[in-house]
Image 1 (cartoon, rainbow, N blue to C red):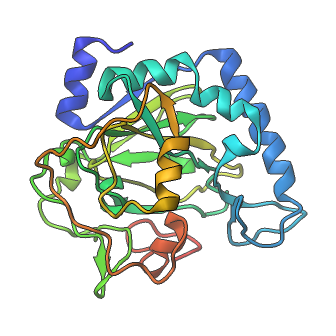
Image 2 (tube, helix red, strand yellow):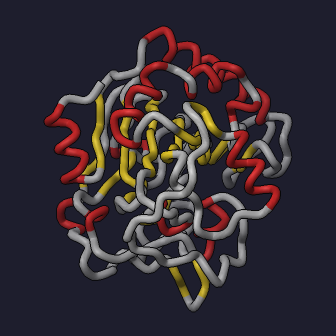
Length: 291
């Protein structure tokens, strides 16, 4: 799927944006499924195991930040996960044995909601090696007005892990004035519906609020090589989760590489999605109604 130039760009910058990479029929299927899930949100009065609701949500005006595991709720998302395009891209970058880590649908509600502070995915979950990537499937046109993904090139090659703590506790966010980050090189992943972004687990990224009048759906697919094992601990429940989330190939023994590690402890006071974890610092990088 990827050319040598694209692979080289990923290694250099820590991300790629592939315009209109998703087949049109699959895009339409997932867009329709997103509409069905959003219609169900109207019946929720508070965030729950399926929905992370945004400020201002009401049955008459559903506002959703995130649908946590859409592949459990509608088969269209499972077909997306197991599609040739997803597997081909993942095999090109992390090998043939692939495990799903998470797959939230970030809806980013309109009206100044949904900012995600600067962070590295690696700050939340470090692994025994860094064959860990995140795909973003654009289900609508994305630009500055609706809070498109923003990334800082080359930050995945920094020798350490940037600090994601605030007042002594993990907050899942990097301070906007953190040193050693080339903020002036920040890139906005503005692209049409059907495009796919890919970023390395240590690439610094975030996104602003959605100032448009519609939700901005972005399907996140976090994938890792089967020999990348999480360092925060493996218990009986997490072992079952590892096995269940193998989506290609087979489980592998852990491969230990010399990668930088900073564990997310002491844990955040607001355990849960990235929105609740970042609650203590929301608004310091991307101002919005939640600031």
